[in-house]
Image 1 (tube, rainbow over the protein chains, first blue to last red):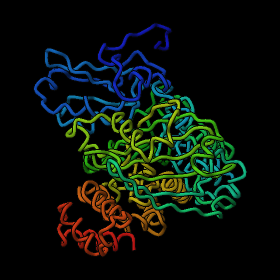
Image 2: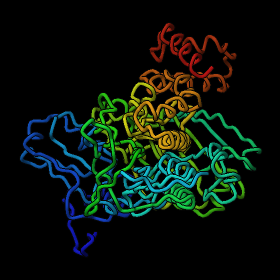
Image 3: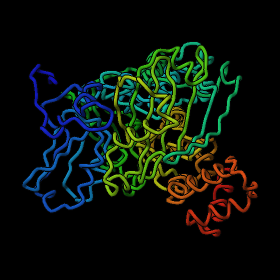
Length: 114
Length: 441
C-alpha cells in the first residue's frame, strides 16, 4: 500500500494475519478498494479514554478492522484504509474517545463498483 | 425559466453539499429554474463515497429527466425478486418474476453508484450547476441571528456564502448536526451495510440466476446474519454479483462477530454457495444506513438551510421494501423546488422554505414512512430475526416431508407444535402479525 506521496506504509501485524474464512487475508480484502491516503488522520482516538473501556465495540464492528487492541490495554488505530462509514464513533459509548470528521477533499476511499 | 442575475450579497443562490442522488437532484432543479448553484462533492467524483444494498427505483426521475432509461448507466433491470428465509440448513424462497419490469418505464435496476451518481451529477451540471469535486464542507457559516448563510470548505479561502444551503452530506451529516436539526444520535437507529462485489462471467450469472440480456435478480434474505439482527442481500450486475449483509450496529459489538465473517458464513450457506461459487472479490465496501425511519428523522428545515437524502434519514428499511436512492432523489428535488420558491420570494428563512416540508408530507417521501413507521422495528425485532425463520422453515419442512408409514399431519397441528418448539407465545405472534398487517396491509 502506498500513500499519496508514494511512500509504502506498513500495517499493524494484526491486520496482516490471514483469516480462516474465504481463503483471503484481510489485507487482500482491503486491497480491493482504492484509498487515496492523506497524511493527516481524519479520525483521532484518545487512548486515555479507551484505556478503561471493556466493551471495545469498535474493534469488532469496524468493517475495515482499523482498531486493534494492544497488549498494554490500549488501542492502535490506523486511518488509512477507512471506508468513512462512521461505525466506530456510532458504536463508541465513551464521550471524547473517537473524534471523527471527513478526510480532506479528494482523499480517502474511492468506490468503483458498489 | 427566469434569467436571474447573480445575487448581490452572497456568492451564489444555493450551495448544495454532497453530489449524491439527493444533492444532484436539488442542484438540477435549482439550476434549471435559473438560480446560481454550486454542488460540492468531497470525493474526487460524485458517487465515489457511496455504496448501497443494490437497487435503484428511478421513476421519480420522470419529472426531471424524461425517458431517463435511455441513458442511465445501470447494470441490469430487476425482473426477478426473491425473498429468502434461511436457517442453518433450510431455505424458503418466495420468487417473483415480472416481464413488464424489463421494458420501459421499468421498475428497479441494479447499478454501480459511482456510475449512477456521476450520471445524475452530469445532468445537474448540464442544467447549469457548478460542480466542485474534492472539496469537503467543514462547517456552516451563520450570521449573528444564527441564520445559515453558507458553508466553510477545506479549500484555501474556501468560504462560500449562499441564500440557501441544501445539506445532502449523507448519513453522518455533520452539517445537520451542527445546525442542531438532530436531537441526538443513537447507535440503535443505524445499521452497517457491508458488501462484496464478486466477478463472474455474464453467461454464468445468466445461467445461475435464470435471466437473460439485461434482466437482473434482487434477493433479500432474512435469517442470514447469525446472532446479529439484520438481513442479507444478493443481486446481479452485468458481470459481477454483489452479496452483503445489513447489521444492527448495537448488536454487532455485543455478539463479537465481525462483519466480513457474517458475509463469509452467508456465502457458505447451502442455498447461497452455488450462486456465489468462484466469484472473485473485486471490491469490498461498507456504509452506514439510517434505518429507523420516522423515529430518527431530524427537523428538515432551519433558517437558510434544508436537509435531504440520508442526511435527513430518508431511507426506507421496511423488510420487503428497501429503498433509499429514490427517497434521496425525491427529497433533493423537493428541496430544490422549495429553495427556488424561497429565493424568488426573497425569503429564505425557515418560513420561506416551508414548501419543502409540505412537499415531503404530501408525497410518498413521508407518506410511505408514516404508513410503515412500525415496520423497521418489527423487521429487526428479536422474534422476527431469531425465532420466526426457524419456526416457519420447520413447518414447511414437515409439510413437504413424506414420513411414511406415518400419515400426513394437519398443517395446523404442525404449526402449533413448531410455534411451541420455537418458544413463540401465541399472543406475541398475534401482536406481531397485527403490527405487520397494519404496516404492510
